[in-house]
Image (cartoon, rainbow, N blue to C red):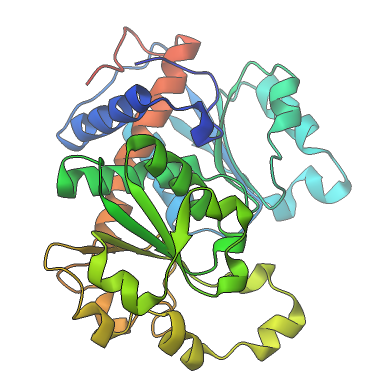
Length: 311
């Protein structure tokens, strides 16, 4: 596998890189271990709320034997006006080897990369930009289900305009040979999505897709007026995966969602843990994919006792 010091965008990944990450994640899933060359330290700097991604990265770090240094933005010097770059320079100076960052600003990581820091950076989500670890765990879930990507029909449905998951996945799925479609409110289907796939109504999508990938409405990124006008029941009937629509999916098709799930909005509550749902499997796969990503950046720094990023 080609090692990298920083992992911030799916644009970094060739098809060979993706398959190497999937293979390494599966090896970790099957019990593979690594040995650190010396004590290694990670800090998870989350400036947006998170359950799955935050705890998944911490679980991955601890399984790899890394010591995790706590960070709370509410009690950090960021509240005193310290820049993100100076925060990173500070934790680098005290010996942190890996920073995992989620930030509300698109491409927050670019000034950090330009600064030439010696610690490694993994992007855990930037605004409405990229979410590479979520994208890779989604690729692992799809690959474990179908054994390939070529020709698969995959619908991404929901709040496209504000979704870093949609953007990362449409790029990587198209690159891997899948055919991407989009659904949800048409006003959220912009030109940046049109170049990757066509828009279809939900009632058409459900009968043809191999994967129905639902996205939540990101109310924290909507205007106050749009939030006040939002009708969850009407949205569910127009754009959600209802029980009736799910019944018309092909027998082999699966349901995915990056979570958190708004039950009864983007999909019916009964479908979250239905036989065709892979939502909790995605969460399990997230730990192993993040182990693979972390092992890769540690290998680049020479922090593994030998070359151990081969599956």
